[in-house]
Image (cartoon, rainbow, N blue to C red; front, side, top):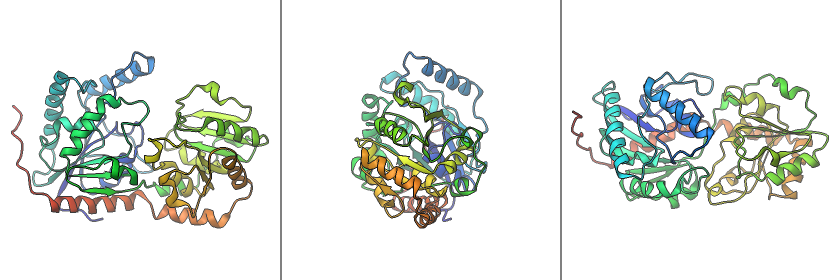
Length: 399
């Protein structure tokens, strides 16, 4: 792997190890090569008065009081950041007094963490979180990169009103943008003009190495039509119900957090299992006879490069997906079908008449799109951005 000498990454992401995101996949590869300081999530919407939000707020509060912790494993190996910062911030980022308080708190904790890293390293700030703009240019960074995995302004469950001005400011100030969907290159153009396309990858071995079928799937009638991921309004629930009805002698299995009413997924052979640990996920995916991606087209899904697609391919199962822009690049190894009866028909045909040649080509495709290779390309991007920018003066030390 190409590593510009020497580099320390300062990364604003989600909570390390809680949900294994694209940014975590990428930096899990880089933690063994260079120093990484990871800043846990700083919030993309104000909390609501719900049991879920109260529980999440309590978890965050406990983490802040404890400070940094050792992270969970990502994939099959424990690849941990050099240090994890549990930020002491408030989630109302649009309020000026909150921004001032958060800036002071974040900068203090980050500069303390940077004291434990190599003093000769170039600090490269990588952020997947627009509210981090409050400390941009104040964390000893040589360059800054916005790693954009979603169009936050279209993402369900976040506050677009709060994030829009923060993201606009971020795009004005960062040195480059890296996106996981080609359409984001246009939507998230930064003032410097440096934009790079880096599609999703896959932990190939994690999904390719065979695992025993989970006990809760062993007795289910086949074929098993499966979906692994968050079940939300982005999914065509009617198509899922139609698949259950048309596959009456088989099963439909949904593995992932449920973001819709359970009553919308009622059928005798439709099994909603909920979330499973990432370490166990390959066993479920490998048990599917076909993996589906029934995403409805929307401003958000047009910028989504589904992580699950390459995970399905690495597991060696047939894949049927709705026709979204980022799915098209894999059309030679998957079936792409419009939602509705065409999608149902393509799924049932793929489950009952497996094309072994296509599946083998799918496995090879997943292998060539591993997170290891994505990390190699990311380091090339970092080298290019560093070469194109002038060194910055260090910030005044905190007192």
